[in-house]
Amino acid sequence: VVYLSNKARGGVVYGQYTTAKGSSLRFSDKGWFQSMFVHEVEARKDAHSNLLSKSETSDLYKIQFHNVKPDCLEAYNNLEAEVQSKLHLDQDYPCDVVGSWNTWYGDQDQAVHLWRYTGGYPALTECLTKLNNNKEYLQFRKERSKMLVSRRNQLLLEFSFWNEPTPRNGPNIYEMRSYKLKPGTMIEWGNHWARAIKHRQENDEAIGGFFTQIGDLYEVHHLWAYKDLQSREETRNSAWQKEGWDSSVYYTVPLIRSMESRIMIPTKSSPLQ
Image: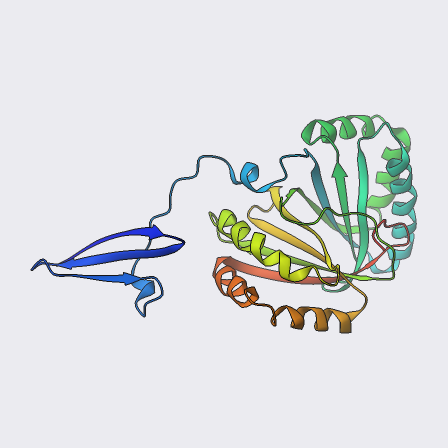
C-alpha cells in the first residue's frame, strides 16, 4: 500500500510516499519517476486575462483572417487599404490598424489584419455601432464579400511582458507563430515566456504577444519581424546560445496541443513595414 503527499518548494515539486510499514522515501520532480506523480496546483484567485494582460492599458485587439479568391487578391488589397486608411485617420473611431499582411508561407491567398481598440470593449462597441450606420463602409463590405472565400476573427489581449506593437520601417518579413494550448495552462505559459522573452530582443525582432478572449480559446499569437528568411534562421539559432532559452522551450512544449507558423509580407498601407 502506498500513500502519497506532495508540495512545492521554490518552484520544484517535492513529495514523499509512505509504505504500509511506515518507512518513507523523498523525491523531487527531477527524478526518474517524475511522471508517476501529479503535483497540486494552487487555485487561481483571478481570471488569467487579468493576471497576464497589461493593467496600465485597456486596449483590445482584433485579428482577422481573410481567405481571398486567388484572382481577387490585388483588388482586395487596394480596397482594404483605402478603407483602413480612412478609419485609421478618423478621430471619431477609437481604433487603429496595427498591421496588415498577405501570407507568403502558410495558407495562400490569405490576408491578416490586426486592429487595436483603445478603450477595450466599449471602444469596440462604439466602432461597430458607427460602422453599421456608415453607408460607405456598408458598401465596402458588400464589395469585399464578393472577393472572399471565408473569414474568421478573434478578440485578443496582449501579454503584459511583451513589447508594445508600434509602427516600423521596412522592408521586413513577419512571422506569426500561433499556439493552441491545453486548457488551463495559460498562466504557466505566461510565467515561462515572461522569462524567455528577454532572450529574443537583441535583433529587435519581438513585435507583440497576444492571447485570445473570444474565438478559439487558449490560443496564443507571437508576432516577430525579420529582415529576411536568412536573418530569421540566424536570430532563432542564436537564442539557443543564451542560458535559459532551452529550459523555456523544454517546459512550454508540453503545454501545446498544436502550433502553426505563417510568414507574412506587409501590405503597402500597413504601419508595420
